[in-house]
Structure formats: structure tokens, C-alpha cells
Amino acid sequence: MVLRRSLLALSLFTVLPSAVVHAAPAEVTAAEAPLQRAKDLEAAGRFGEAWEIVSAALEAAAAADRAALEDARARLSEKTGFLSLRVDPEGAEVFVDGASVGLAPVAALRRVTIGTHEVRVVKAGHETFLRSVSVGPDGKAVVSAVLVRESAVGTLRVRDADGQPIHVVIDGVDVGATPLERDVAPGLHKVAGAGIDRSAPEQEIDVPRGRTVDLELRSRPLAATLRIRTKDGKGVVRLDGAVVGEGAYEGQVRLGVHRVEVTHEGQQPWRREVVLHDQEVFEQEVLLEAPPTAALVDDGYVAPNSGWYGSFGFLGTLAPKGAGSEPEIGCLGLGAYACTMSKPIGGGLTGTIGYDFDPVGFELRMAGLSDYYAGKASFDGNVLAAGGVSAAAPARTESFTFVRAGALASLQVRATAKTSAVSFTGAVGAGASYRWGFLYRKAEIDDPALASLGKVPEANIEKVLSPAVTADLGIGFRIGSTSWLMVSVVGILETAGNDFRSRPGDSLATDLVAGALPAGVDPNALPKLPSASYHYASGPQYTVGPELSFRFGP
Image (cartoon, rainbow, N blue to C red):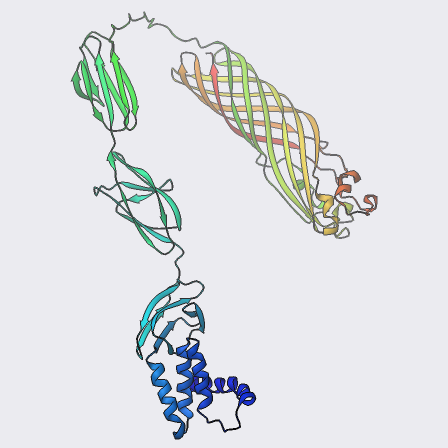
């Protein structure tokens, strides 16, 4: 009712100016204006709107004007019908014959021209609703549009044509055995079948979003062919331990590894392990030979217990008490309010050469070693709180990487107790070590104006010579007449003193930061990031770790 009155008011407002300009001196009735507007719309083929104007006018028409309006509505009713639209959810946009009629909820009844009409309803995140309906003369067609949310995936259903439980491989990943139903990402997928004794060729299939696609795999049995025959037609053929022929064998076998053996009395057996793939043919002609003459063995031979020996191996190291680096011993001396440091861990190659007098021997131990440890120091920029240490400013976080590498040599005395299969050994000695220290430092400055000063890291290399004490304790296992596999624990004691440290100074030169500064800024006017002297290591250095080595000799 409200809609019809609104349409009537709209039509009256539309035609009123025209009526004022062109009206004849005669008085215009209340029905003539809507009738004229309806007639114009009817001439334009807009029968539904014409019917709505006439119907709205009838609601408020006087008795004298109703006859003409009712005749017009009756005529228009033969050309129009009702379209009932029920839409869910709210906010969906409704289109009739391509023209938007608004967002849901829309008017429950809409007068349209008789014939077929297309109704389309859309909303983001939902599947589009599309339907064609036919409206008869003065009839009613009802359209209920309930939008379904769009799915983010599609569904793939896979079965084997012969009903075999073959594994399904989607885009190179085994996702289970047939029959299989699985959600997949929308788009193209490569699907194949694989199994121990069957396979299906790869297929490419497109799975639309929110749809279910059925795929049928056509698998076939997998097999390989094995052909074995002897030169003289004699000999027992065994496949995986089972007798399968005399002098020859041919047959299809499963894929994978197989053990083939041909034996004949008085001749040397022939054995082979073969790996067979799909449709592969393995063919072999076997010639059995007489066994070689056995070499004379001196059962009385006994390996000597004394003499020259040597070894080489691999050593892992750990410093349980740390290296005494600057973040470990001088956090407050740096002006930092917090420091962290890892324990040195590393390894190297070792070797010995010596003479065993049984049970005591003397040897030279040599080793090439390196280790690594890292840490951080945090500065808040407060020089006073840091005890006046100028390196406390500016506020920053410095990351440190320490690497030590070098060589060690030690003269050791070794005691050994042996059985026919196992030996127990221990050694102690003294020597010297030479180490290089490498420091890599990078600063991240809190102040954006000074951040460029920390862009370029600094590195320092120093070296130190130290006396060294070595010791080891291990067990050996005989792997040959004069060879052993040794497993030992090795300890090394050194000293780094107090001078194994980097040089103090500014971490970055002016020319390193000049290219990163804005135009017009004098790099000489910028403060440089201070660098204190950092210990790579200090004081006694104790490392311990496992050693795996091979010893050759008694």
C-alpha cells in the first residue's frame, strides 16, 4: 500500500509541470494525470511500472474516477504478473533482467511484464544465485534465493577402475589409498596411482572451488622379468633362497631387490643381488668355475706387540668453563649492563707417530684445532652509570663472534694393555700450541641518527703462543692384524695469558660511513662508535672432547 501511494505521488510530481504548461482551460480530473503517465510507460513497454502507477492511483481515487483506472489496470493485468522475491542473507544485491532492484530485503512482490525473467543475487563471499522464471498474465512466480557461502577448497574423489586399493599421489605427495575423498586447493592438480605391485599413469585435473570432482584411475600390475641360464645347462638356480630352476630360469617377479644364486657341486657358487624396476628385463648367462686353490695360511703367525706405529683421527672439543672472553670477564669493564656468551665448541684433525716398547711407548701428538663461540653485550648509553667508561655510549647492542684456530704438538708417554681383540691405553704429555684469534663485531645502534655507524662490522685477528699439556684415555678394537679402531677422551690444557685480545680504537673510519650519509652532512662532525679492547680468551684454557682414530702398528 505504501509503495503504491509513493509511486502515485512520484508520478503526479513527474507529470504536474507538464500539465501546468500544456493544460487546456478545462479542469483536469484526479485520474487523468496517473492515466497519462501509465499510458506513456505502456507505450515504452514498461508495463509493470504502468500497472503499479494505476494501482497506486486506485487506492486514493474518488468513485467518479475509479472506472477509468480499473479499466486501465485490467488491460495492464493481461500484460503483467507478480514476481515474488525472497532473499537471504540481508545485504545481497538483487538484479532482475540485469537491472539492480536494491539490497535485500527488497519488496516481496514486484509487478513485471509477462514472459521469462532472469533473477540474479550476489554478495561478496557467497556463491552467485542465478535463475530464470516465467510470469503469466496476472500470475505470480516465486523465487527463493538463499546464498551459499563460497568454499575455499574443492573436493576430489578418486577410485581405481578395478577396485584395487592403490595409493593416490597428488602433486607428488602420497595422500592415502583408494577409494579416497580429499579437499584440495582449487586449480589444476596432477594425480597418479602408486603401489607395491600396481601403478596408474598421471592425469591432470582441474578442481573448481566449492565443487566435487570424481576421478577414476586405471592401474596396471607392476612386474619385471628375470632370465638366468648357465653356460653348460647345469646348476641349481635359487631366487631369494628358494629353488626355482635347474640350469635356467625365466619368469616375472615383483619389483625391488632380489638375491639370485647358482650352485653346482665342485664349482664356485655364483651370487648376485639385483634391483628390478617396472618392465625391466634382467638377463644373465652364468659360467660356473672351479674354486681357486686355497693359499697356505700360517696359523702360527702372531702380530708383534712392539714397534713403530702411527694414527690419525678426528677430535671434538668443548671448553666447559668458557674461554675467558671479554663478555665473560669484563661486562662491567666494557660499560655494558648485560652480557651473554656461549661455551667454545669445535674440533679438528689429530695424528700420532711413535714407538711402542710394550707396554710403554713414546709418541709425538699433533693436532690442527679450531673452535667457535658467540655472544652479545647491551649498552644503555649511560656513561656515569657505567662507571665513566666512554665505550658505554651510544646505546646499542653489540654481537660478537670469536673464532680460534691453530696447531698443537706434544711429546707423550703412552701405556697400553692388549688382548687379541681389545686394547686399553692412556697417555700424558707436554708441548706447545699456537693459536690465531679472529673477532667479528657488529653493532646495532638505537639512535636512528647514528645507526649508519654500526652498518659495517669490524674484525680483528691476533695470535698467541702457549705451553700445552695433553692427556687421553681410550679403548681400541682390532680390525686387522696390525690395525685398530680407537675411541678416546682427550683433554688439552693451555693458557691464553692476558694479551690475547683485540686493539682498542674507533670501530669505523670516516670514509666507511661517508657514502651512507645524507648530502651536505660532514662525516667528520659525526661521533665514531668507540671500540674497547676485547679479550679473545684469557687465563687457563681447558678443553675436553671425544676422539675417533685409526691406529696402524702393534
